[in-house]
Length: 126
Image (tube, rainbow, N blue to C red; front, side, top):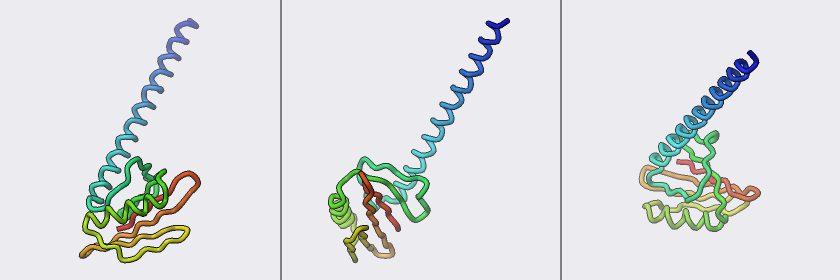
């Protein structure tokens, strides 16, 4: 009798473990889809490689991510790549939180780079 109860308990535990893994995989797929959707919206705004998106802070007109790249490298990247994609830099504020402002005909974008401990938080508004 005891062995049947133990077997039943093991099956129940295995069932719940299997279900939890499926939920995690589904959440990862949703996140990947959300990121792909925002990359499509940002077709003319470049993104750094090796970024860590902050899904809780993303909205319809902003994209937020962390980067381990150097602050100056991030600024240089956006100045060069935005110009390459047809954006014109209209303002640049270098302070604790550098701001880069760009425009295209009928479009504007602001990029904020917020230094944190071991990484930088980049916020792109459009």
